[in-house]
Amino acid sequence: MVATQSSADGSAARGRRRFALYAYPPNELGYCGPDDPSLLTAAAGLDASPTGGLDTIARQFTGAWPYLSLIARANHIADPLEDAVVDAYWLGGPMATRVTKEDFAASSAVRMEIRTGRHEEELVSPLAHGAPLQHNYHVFVVYPWLGVLRRGGPEKVLSILDGCRIRQGTLLSLDADQATVESRELVFDGRTLKEGKPRAEKVRLGLEAMVGHEVPRLKIGDTVSLHWDWLCEPLSAEEAGRLAESTARVLQALL
Image 1: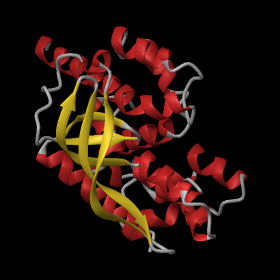
Image 2: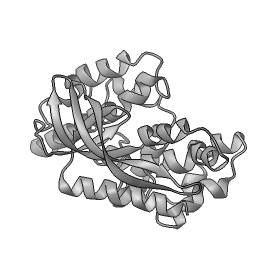
Image 3: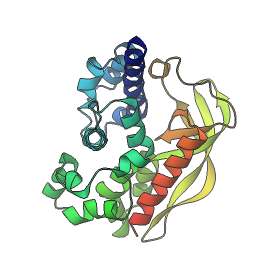
C-alpha cells in the first residue's frame, strides 16, 4: 500500500510539473493563464502536490483545462493533472481519442467559441474522423487561425500556428540556456496545413525548477518536444511516434 501510494503521489507531482513545463511559454507571451507567469514557475518548483497551488493556477488556463478534464473523465481518472492525462493532452495517444463528440460539444471550450460565432459541427466533427482531442486539436480546429489563413490572412498567422502547436525536433547543439533543434516547419498551401521541410531553429531550455531530477539530461541527437521557442523535454521513441501520429490525424481530419 505504501509503495502504491508513493507511486500515485509521484505521478501526480510529475503531471503537474509537466503541465507547467509545456504551459509556461504561452503564459509568458500572455496568451493564456494568470497574468504573472512567475506564479506558474513558483508553483511548479515549490508546490507541485495534488493539493498545492499549481492546481488553482492550472484552472486559469481556460484553453487547456477543459481538455484535461474531459480526458480524465473519459478515462475514469479523478485527477485532471495526473501524469497520464497531462501526457495525453500535450502528446496525444489513445487516451485522447476516448472523449466523445457529445461530451466535447458540451464543454466550455466549444461553448465559448459558439458564442463568438463559430459552428458546433465545425468544432467537433474532426473527432468523428479520428482526430484525438489533444493540444494540437485546439490549435488547428478550435482556434480560428486556420480560417483566417483560408480567408487570405497575413503570413504571421502561420507562424502563430507553428509556434503554438506541440512539435518535435532533433537536438543539434546545446549552449548554456539555449539549444539548436532541427524540426519540420508548418506550411500552408492555400487550403490545408502540413509539415514541410526540416529547418534549424534556436529555442530556450525549459526551467530547471519544473524539471527536477526526473527528466534525463539532454544529449545531442535526442528527440525533444517544443512549444513556441521553448524546449520542453526529451521524448522517447514511443512518445515521439504518438505525437507525430496525433498531429497527422488532426491535420488529416481538417481536409
